Length: 477
Ligand SMILES: NC(=O)c1ccc[n+]([C@@H]2O[C@H](COP(=O)([O-])OP(=O)(O)OC[C@H]3O[C@@H](n4cnc5c(N)ncnc54)[C@H](O)[C@@H]3O)[C@@H](O)[C@H]2O)c1
Image (cartoon, rainbow, N blue to C red; front, side, top):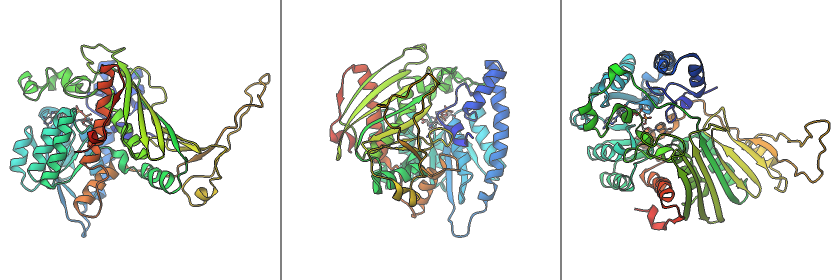
């Protein structure tokens, strides 16, 4: 089953209304309607989805007596903004006060209307400074604008005394990310960066129990991961809701096409390596307990029209880490011309392998015990991993002969942790719990910065066509 968050990932292809299409929906849509008809298709899917969300979220409006209400605004009501609102509607104790989005005739209106259906008295704004001036009671702002707006939006919200949840990538520039860290420190307000896997219970279980307590993989020596996407049309928009040229220009966009597909443009986003890779490279650093020492990368615009896709559509990257346990080489690839095997991270140690993703449908946590590793019975008994399924090497056909030198296949275990809520809900909960003083941020500004340094260097390495080094001080502010 594709969960809500599967739909809410970095946007589904050609879903002009936003984010409500999962991969299955898109395939279905592509097979039943011509490309331009996708807009209507997306809309009807979205309506059905919103109805479900309403039902799922209804109990959350009753504020439990022991919870103080947190006044929240959304800044950036596009695909991801809607996903975050859908997740927040399931969290008790939040009061939505405002929605700010420059596309007021479309995205802003849609999210304001959604929230009004839930009986929230929300005001819509085009200009975030006006919102900050007028909405004095706000405690927190959740930001899901394009990456190049994150730094000014975050800094001004922090300076206005609000706690901020800001989507990844923290910023499209290192200077932007650095100034966000400094603003969080100066104001003493909370800044959570939206690397939601940091709060995913399966990732936490792997980090704390499997890699920490059990050291179940032994010494990790190599890592690989990927996010592959099939070719997809550019994101569109309904002509009658196009923004006027002067407003587009005022907010840094040259056209509606660029406004909808900002990820691909230099100066606005960072291309797939930043958009998708940042989620997973963040996990490399987290699980290895280190930042890389070197990076080399090959990439380019190998397929798409460079006039509308300024960033690289293909990137193949090798990081070299010096961890406490020894050197680690970590490969990562992202490409947008073939969706084979989707996305996952794969950690390989001298005693086992862990393959995981945030999805419940694909790679929901597989563990392979290497035949030379000590038995994992105690971890099975403790419930840390499922009982093994023995993999048998079998000849495929009658004529095939099993070579006796064939390696014995490792036993397959599963990570027995399932997330039934939308993917972003635990990370948002962690943010609101920290505001209430009952938790600690899972991805504060400093961690977001470390990941931004690690990821943004890839585009630099592709351009330089050489191995680049990091200094330890590059990751610190
Ligand atoms: N954590 C995740 O899994 C995840 C998934 C998808 C997107 N994201 C992140 O969320 C952010 C938004 O992505 P998206 O897919 O929703 O993009 P989007 O283009 O669908 O939405 C961006 C919204 O911001 C609005 N906007 C642009 N400039 C603005 C400004 N100056 N002031 C107010 N509103 C402005 C646009 O009108 C639009 O509604 C990005 O940083 C992206 O990387 C994170």
